[in-house]
Length: 106
Image (cartoon, rainbow, N blue to C red; front, side):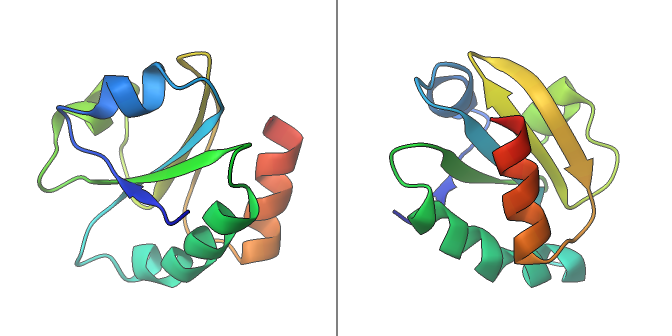
């Protein structure tokens, strides 16, 4: 499954009410590092299908969700489990580092 685009309107349904852990990528079209990690997140979303959901929130079009969790810089990655943030990291990282972070967190 590819990453899912989430909006402020769908954030609670897709993230906080998910029955599996969710990695949220807060990003923007103009953000170079955000574009760098995009392909790795797409690959990971396929590899973790059914175990972890990976979603993307465009911060320019959806300002409320990032504000609720305190995003100050992008890319900002948050892992939600049972509706709560259990881990977060800021900045680009290679796929292997992202995979290790997810594995350690969930």
